[in-house]
Amino acid sequence: MHIRQTVYQFIYDVIELIWPSNHCLLCRGLIPATDLLLGVGLCQHCRHDLAAYNCCPNCATFIHCNATPEQLALHHRFCHSSQVQGIDAFIALAPYAGQMRQNLLQLKYHGQRRLAKPLGREIARAWQYTGWLADVIIPVPLHAEKMKQRGYNQCDLLAKACGEILNLPVLPNALQRVRATDVQNKLNAEERKSNVEAAFACEESIEQLAGKNVILLDDIITTGSTMSACAIALQSARPAAIYGLAVAGKLLKTNSFEEFAD
Ligand SMILES: [Zn+2]
Ligand SMILES: [Zn+2]
Image (cartoon, rainbow, N blue to C red; front, side, top):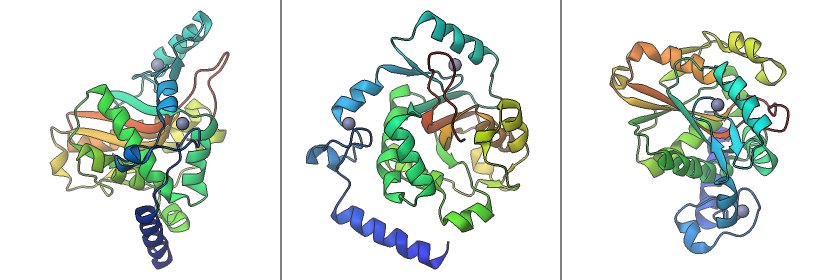
């Protein structure tokens, strides 16, 4: 990591320690100090609102409990035609919309690393809620060139915060992005798939994954093509199961899925 980035990270950590973020990640309302000590990032009201959505374990789409029959039929059609290879099940914290979308854009493109901690802790809670078992967390890697530009991988930061809550080891180097890929948001599902195909490689000596349940962690799940490419690269390590965990998944709207950057 560039020395300037290391210094920035240190400053962020010190500020966070002295003056932790005390606003809800979604409504910006204040979070009680007692909850802050537990690392909570959402207020009770927003947590209650999120509970009205179901995250489909097959395609990571968020479906509101008041979805119309037309919306459900749309999801059904999409879900059955979008089997994601290599991933046993998906779970995400929130739909990619409104303030959660802003949070992720800030974290990814505007250097707002302080958001990684509350977001990482909240995705850990979303994971705990599933009751699924895991042994290790692997963040989706950035290409070395992008890592140099950005100075950090937001997925590494999220994985670290998530691992602290779940008490799981994080392996940030288990996967490498061996081929630079285009930004996914202008591509359709087929193009996304071929864009990330063979873009990832698994560390040769990673024997400790054999028979283990792996959490693959990304910031956003769209078509699942990035997760799938990572899962295929991990197959040589023979894990027992691979789960996809993310901050956000696509939102099922009235007549189409919300499009966004992968
Ligand atoms: Zn709130
Ligand atoms: Zn689905």
